[in-house]
Length: 351
Ligand SMILES: NC(=O)c1ccc[n+]([C@@H]2O[C@H](COP(=O)([O-])OP(=O)(O)OC[C@H]3O[C@@H](n4cnc5c(N)ncnc54)[C@H](OP(=O)(O)O)[C@@H]3O)[C@@H](O)[C@H]2O)c1
Image 1 (cartoon, rainbow, N blue to C red):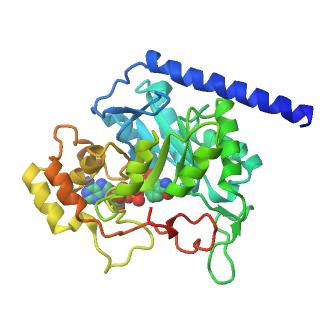
Image 2 (image 1 turned 180 degrees about the vertical axis):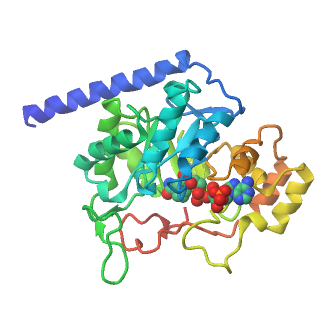
């Protein structure tokens, strides 16, 4: 092996060890985060703390998102789920800065996630992409950086590159190479944690066999129509927390058709909500928390921001959880149509 590469690997391993030992030492030092709303904290395998409840920002329009993030922080939200592809990180960043400048919250009290978009999977593109998100978000580090999807798109300025037949133009970058870039940005201190999103069990297994730093979470679609029982257990057995996205059934997803079922209007869900004197949305959020999942419902409506956070004064009974589990019909609201030809498309296997 060439001496330069040997040195690089020794340096990488020793930096990784430093980062890991720093993460592990936070286990003892972690300070409790002050919150008006009482979201429980969960711990990643490295003992880094994450508020189990956060705010989603996909489809939160520029013009609305800054105000809702400010309101969220005022109400006590401390966990904001962002992504470069949502096109609103600048506005989220304005809100974060405003609240930190006002002294409402300190950086270390916030938990901010962003995600690496599919056109930036090449290893050398990971760091500039993360730095762009940091710049937009007005931050010096992220708490969590995720590979948004396992499949890579053709690199370039077009964030949604298409073939003539309307499918996405894929790149053959392997997510294992992308992960090396993710490990490098964590070792540089640009993010405290790294994880994945939309990975299936085989992809997780392959990543675990080939990584130096294990992912802390797999962020996946999860709600009563797609309970993800097997993938959730699979991740839990490996010390990887599940973050449930689209917990309310993503009614504002751009491709929703009027005839498709609306989870929030499900009559059986409505009956359970009545029994607990809660709203269907609150039951759906509690369903994730009671399964030890992190949950990140999205809203740009102030009243719903409060409603969604009022889920810490009750728990679902095991029999009601079991009843909700029976709603599962493999109903995926975010199927990523047009990417099926990628060798890394995650939804060809059962879980
Ligand atoms: N990793 C990934 O690939 C991925 C994919 C999808 C989502 N995510 C993340 O997960 C977050 C949540 O998922 P999502 O945005 O797809 O959908 P969601 O949170 O399941 O649903 C959001 C929708 O529900 C409405 N809503 C919110 N609270 C409500 C309430 N109490 N009563 C009735 N309606 C309510 C919102 O309306 P208003 O906003 O108009 O109030 C919005 O239309 C995203 O924002 C994003 O951060 C990640």
